Image (cartoon, rainbow, N blue to C red; front, side, top):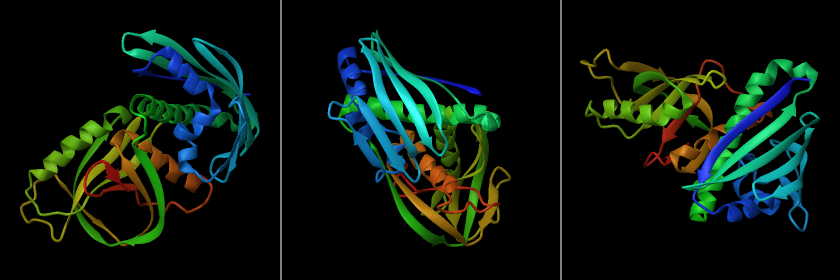
Length: 288
């Protein structure tokens, strides 16, 4: 069977003993799980002492985890997936003291069913993104006592036909926020009165860490003297599924993953030819 390996790290400004105790108790996983955030209504069962954990849901599938061994620098778990397909894996956290606190390294060794061999690289990429999201939420909670990220599924609605002025760019995932800020600054230099700002994504290639995007503002009419540095876009009226994220931009992946899980489980159909987009409401910390 195709082997899977994922390894991601983050540093938390807390002593190693506190980090160990938090991660080893499955009761705490409800707080920061990168998967349960997409389906908070999923059924979760945790044993009294927090050493065994089972879940079932429409988006998150079904599975079980059990704490196998806990030492000061390593916490080991068994992982069994029951749905959407059956497979087993071993995961663990490695903890090490640093001058800035505790480095957490989350590692998974697993496999795919043989008939899904073609999904190996894609699966490692997306699980790695999930691990990064989870680690960022662990860091937030342990350092600040809360996670500044909330996802709400608002249902379907109609997005009116809109004229947009856009700046196009290609970037990597780790640079997307920085580059988009610079591109929105370019749009501000136009001095146009616009109450609509959004980003469109014609292409997401997570396996190769490449994102094509367009930062855009809405306008009533296109300026006659618009420079070639800017693109004119006319979006038709669209039926959309609205997912609202409130919180820091670094956690926006929580909303994106929720949408992808909804598509995967056929809760709505992604219309070909039209890119997903972020609509900025009030400030860049609140998106939908």
